[in-house]
Structures are given as C-alpha cells and as structure tokens.
Length: 208
Image (cartoon, rainbow, N blue to C red; front, side, top):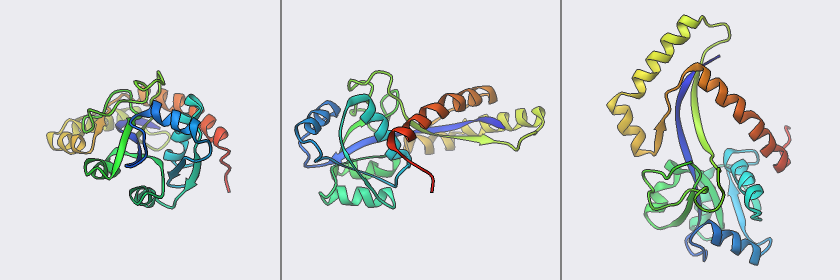
C-alpha cells in the first residue's frame, strides 16, 4: 500500500553533436525532411526511454526508427561516436556528456526546466503543451499495514527528504524531492497507469 512519494528525476532528449538541430521543433522539421532516417536508441523495448519517445512521437508526429540497446550507456556511446541520432535518458546519467559537448541536449521532459540544465527548454515550452514525463520513486508498504504504521513511515520519509545532506545530493543529480501523503501517491498511481498503458499499446509492446 502507498506510503509516500520520494523523488522525481526528469529525462532529457539528446542528439548527436553534429546533427543539425538546436531544439525540438528543428528536430521535428528534420525528421519530416528526412523520413525514416532518424535513429532513436533506448535501453530496450518497453523501457522508460522507449515509451517516453513513443509519447513524444504521438504528440508531435516525429518519426524515428527505434533501435533497442541492452543499456542506455551503450546507446549514448554510439551517439558520441556518431552512430545514433537521438535518445532519451535520465539527466543524471548523461549530464557529463552534455557538459563536455559530446552530445546536445535539446529538451527536458519535466514540467519545469532542470536546475542543472537551465538553458535547456522543456518539451512543453518547445511546442507540446502539458507534456511531462519524470521517473518517480515511492515508498510502499505490504498490503494491510496498519494506518498508524503508514503514518509513522510517512513522517520518517519526510524527515529524511528534508535532511540537508540528502537535499544537496539530490540537487547535484537534478533529483527533486516529492514528499506526499499516501493519498496523493495513490492518486498519482491511478493517473499514471492508463497513460503508460496507452504508450505500451502505441509502441506495440507485448509480454514474452
């Protein structure tokens, strides 16, 4: 049963450094001018990066050829080497590559800009109003846990998230603390379920 949200971490849409686009709208235009030519890597079919890309494609009409990798690190490596055009990855995983100029960041998926990438626009700012995708984590308890225990766990979680050392560590990784009530976490889970179910259907993902 839900105890409370812990944190969220945005994804970032990155492209190889020599792809002639500077923002999401230019990427969409490039895709239209070069149909079937843009390759989009992800850490496997059905991964968060893959499904976020499917949501983006559905909202923008962007066409990309899906290239599944075993890990996001492999996809980013091929992008650095010029063998892959686009990928969507957790900000903390690719921030060094962006800062070193080895890839270009063109949009973040959160509702507001990331503190570690203040110059990079959100997808919503880039012409897709309301678009928001973040990786979020939460604390859950076994079914039937007494409400008194759930409340104690929630209080302890809020205290931990407010610890200065935790705040500093989260800021360095562009992770946002999201303390919440059990009811707020439950509501979020109910909202997210149909959204991602639709993304899975659009992507044609099937269980083995």
